[in-house]
Image (tube, rainbow, N blue to C red; front, side):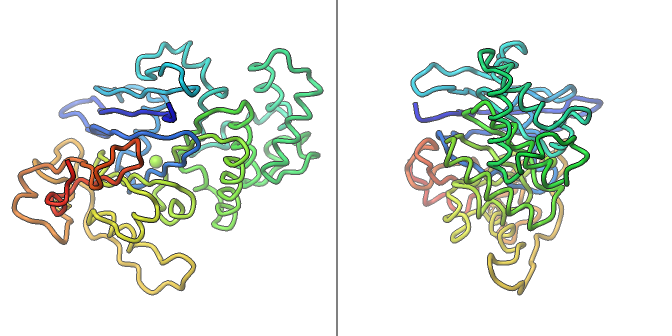
Length: 336
Ligand code: SF4
Ligand code: MG
């Protein structure tokens, strides 16, 4: 199969006193080999919860209540449901098949170990036949790929700039040639210029290694430059899924339109920053109908009663990269 990740009906709740927080509800998408899928939403939209559920890094009180996350490590091999996987089997997939770069990525580096030695460790744990000398050479090569000079391999993390540490973390995630890299806001801690450099490097590395990426951020403009397809999340659900170009040119969901209009146009001076008035709903007490209804400029009567589901709008399934939206405004156009 050319699908590397098949997420089907994934729901995550935070249990606690009172009603559970429905952080992520019925999330379904497929990721093709080598594809970059961006996931965008405001804080509290469920995007970070989605990442931790995908990678099984979630901790109680977060619980996956339903759904599957099927990972296909190689073309043609049977899939592995990560939701069901034993921790030991999951650890065996880390680095070699599936790598994770989190928001606090800088903490992923060991502060008391030289940078290069950390690469050597990861490389040799996963390929015991690799000699120390060969691993050091590969470490220097990988650092070079993210624009860090070879002599920095002997530095400690605190001797590097934040941007360098971040790039080193991304290079480390790629060291064992995973098929899938999951990134949660990996560039929020660095300045805008450095962000662009890091993303350019991610794209270059993707061309060299061919890995697929799920990239989560609140910054739609970043995804418009980086991603092949974009999933927009609101109140724990995907409300629109489309190619980056379609999403930018013709957003279908009113929330997507609002997000797009919140950002200055690409490569143009800032003329307006519209934003989206209002706040996301309480995830303990979601409204019966469309969760965006209280903020939606196009709200209709039925929106307050009936939840719009994510449906295809060009007749193609998600595996064909089809365009989907969850909004009653587009019900007539649905291809079934
Ligand atoms: Fe707005 Fe109704 Fe569409 Fe929800 S379903 S986004 S309230 S038009
Ligand atoms: Mg987050």
